[in-house]
Image (cartoon, rainbow, N blue to C red; front, top):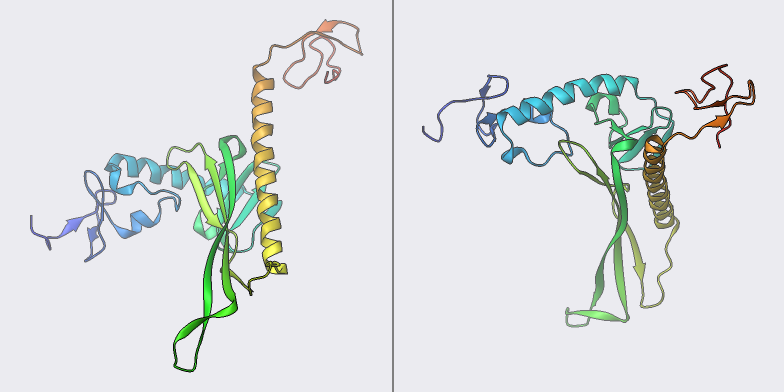
Amino acid sequence: MGLFDKKFCSICGEKIGLLGNRKLEDGNCCKDCASRLSPFFSERRHSTVEDIKEQLAYREANKAEVEKFNVTRTLGEGTKVYVDEDQKKFIVSRSSKWRDENPDVIPFSSITGCETRIDESRTEEKMKDNDGNLISYRPPRYSHDYDFDVKIYVNNPYFDEINFQINRSSVTEQSNGTVLRHGAEYESYAKSLEEIKEIFSGIREDVRAEAAAATAPKVPVKCPGCGANTLPDEKGCCEYCGCALPLN
């Protein structure tokens, strides 16, 4: 088969245009089908046609989850984390019209960890001497660029981490060899990072506690209503009279 022979998408069957092919392990994928995959998915070239079909089915089902998603909390400014605290789920999106993007709806129970980092790069500023040569200031002056990174680890069949920056563009600050005092923009992003780390670490601990409670053996308690020793039902009530039982 020649380099410029017509290719057809192994997923939808449509003809693939010039430069539009996305190679799979055992077939081809058109740009349209590839665009519907999760933005956090990075293993396309090592995926089979069946793998991609399964993920597209998952992505189609995800649309219903997006419709039910109700934002109760928003974190970040560039790429944002939207949280639905009632359903215990979250999404990550850079778009204000996030529903149109079909973002992956991730349950809290899928979170396995969270890391945050402030990435710094430093460049020395120079001046020209009388001969036009670049020389250092005395004391040296530096330009500092900062990006505020988040990595959320998840248990998902198609990706295991979500990486993004909460800042829209790098935060730039200058120093002249003395102690660098960060400005309001830097401090705001740093505070947002701490909040995200605290929230997602807390979510992970809550999930662990709920899992432990679910597997713990039930202990009989005395019902305050009828006085019987009873095991709580699914609603935490007495199996005899239906009275609410104490939590401990």
